[in-house]
Amino acid sequence: MTTTTDVILTDAGPLDDALAQLAGAVEKLGYGSGMHQLLAKPRREMSVSIPLRRDNGDVEVLSGYRVQHNFSRGPAKGGLRFSPHVSLDEVRALAMWMTWKCALLDVPYGGAKGGITIDPTQYSTGELSRVTRRYTSEILPIIGPEKDIPAPDIGTDEQTMAWMMDTFSANVGYTVPSVVTGKPVSLGGSLGRSSATSKGVVHVALAALEYRGLTPSFATAAVQGFGKVGAGSAQFLAEAGVKVVAVGDQYGSIHNSNGLDIPALQAHVAATGTVRGFGDSEPIDAAALLGLEVDLLVPAAVEGVINADNAANIRALIVVEGANGPTTAAADKILAANSVLVVPDILANAGGVIVSYFEWVQGNQAYWWTANEVDERLETRMIQGWRCVLETSIRRELSLREAATVTAVERVADAHLTRGLYP
Ligand code: GLU
Image (cartoon, rainbow, N blue to C red; front, side, top):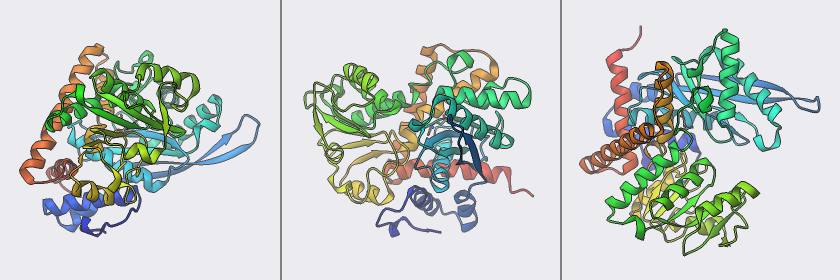
């Protein structure tokens, strides 16, 4: 097991990054190897085979996972990802980050994550429904409103959650809306859930700008990734007066130094499926987007995009991590040496799980909040989280990521120690 972050010189993978961050926090908190191992190893993991009957009658067997990293502070919580890059190690890393995220924002959950190794764009709606339902029934014994509550992540959406909720309910014999969050509003989803992650990203981005003495209407931003989180972040940044000069997705990146017209761009993406070819812009390559001289860089796609190879090229003043794990442990050191302020994922993108928690609370009480109530409570929690991390980073002389991880790890360890070790 890594005992110090100093040995990280090159990129490894998301699990190594997560373990290096944990090792750094454990060292700062002075915990022994027992506590370190307890926090490093998932409490429970399940690997399942998912036989799928394709529309043409062929049968294909997919791999799926659910990793429950920790339950010390409550039921496990975390998204379900459909991506060809899903592996057990990736899901382990994402589950650990969920534990820290929930602890940091003080939502009463542990952390979990699920994944299926599949490219959802290559399957019909009927096929995706069958994959989701078979996966749900395979992991059924370990999920539930008081055990582990899945939610959307990359490649999954409200419809996926509706299928999971329906499959779970059909199997237990009654309707259980709170087994998942991020459901359609018609099935007990929360108002404001679909925009929650991106609104949260923008709340902390604006707080970070203010901390650095920058005014939104004079600030510029580049957003890497244009899915739900990236597109929403671009939209809410633009609405706050920030000039969004570049965005990119997996098909291409575009730039306009006068600022992109985000509503027009969203209409272009809705029509074509990509930002590429948007009229009022010129194409740039993905590496150039990451290296733009902007105030804010928002990586909002996948892990490891800011890595040992390109971190020295980052010229943004502030990086706000919309994605989980976009900066590798090696890149973190380079950014810190160059005084780039990194607002870490477990704080920056926590808006999603915060409103998931609000959805679970509303569902348990069968009492619905207005969109304004949801938005206001989200903002309050994000700003509380930002202030707590900033204050800890100043007091303990840590980076924002170290401060966030130390705070979260300490809360989880405290919960564990207070409960005591059974038997
Ligand atoms: N997938 C989201 C995340 O990574 C949301 C998880 C949830 O709402 O449980 O934070």
